[in-house]
Image (tube, rainbow, N blue to C red; front, side, top):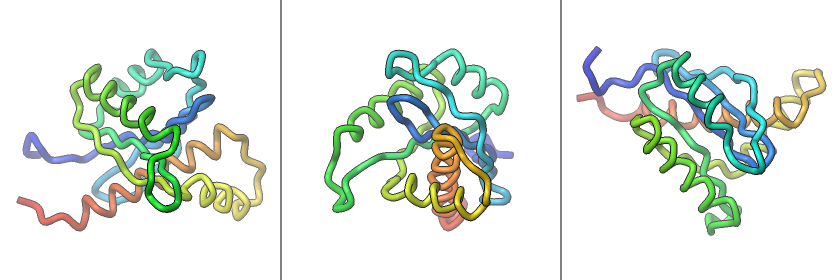
Length: 145
């Protein structure tokens, strides 16, 4: 594998209470939900994030970028951008932001279709899957060098 080839990614759906997390593979362009991480005083739990990064050894980190439906920033837009910068600064892994409009709503629909009750943290991890798979689709469509 060339040094710059991406195989494994971790995706994040940042929230004030929970951060949903998913792991994805570029080979399959699919992601799987991981257990969401509870925030500590509305801040990311860096210790658990570091543990997941060591466990999965991703070549790229994906962060959902929340905006209003019209694409304008909302109160969480800058928080997500800061989180993305912090991830890159702490772990020195390339980080991409992905438009996450309506992913939480779609995650609720996915959960309803599964006919199993899903907690808020599980919904957040499903949203992280949707964010990650969006990035994986765009990555698969890019011409490879």
